[in-house]
Amino acid sequence: MRVKTGIVRHRKHQKILKLAKGYWISRHKLYKKAHEAVLHAGAYAFHGRKRRKRDFRSLWITRINAALINSGIKYSKFIKALKDNHIEIDRKILAELAVNQPAAFQKVVDAALKSKKPSLSAD
Image (tube, rainbow, N blue to C red; front, side, top):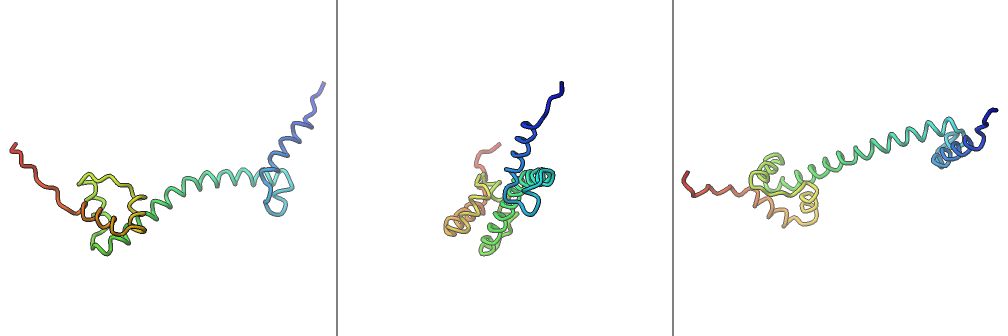
């Protein structure tokens, strides 16, 4: 006795067509085209989530660099100075300070640029 897939297949197709709602031309009407479009959309969405992280980091670096022009220091030297002085502020917060609170950002720059004091203990 053969098993017909009418209900199962119809539900599967309807699920894909629902996901493809709003797509152009035949991509929201025909199952095969809709299935391809939904698969590609998922791949693009996954890639976009990874891409967004790169894009924001690049934006933060650009904003920090632009704010550092007034101080006459390069971005790479500023980041090195932060690490040397054990100032742990991430680029997102630094960029936010640079854009919205320039005075606070300048204090961070000054703190990073101050040289580490040599230890007084004799080894």
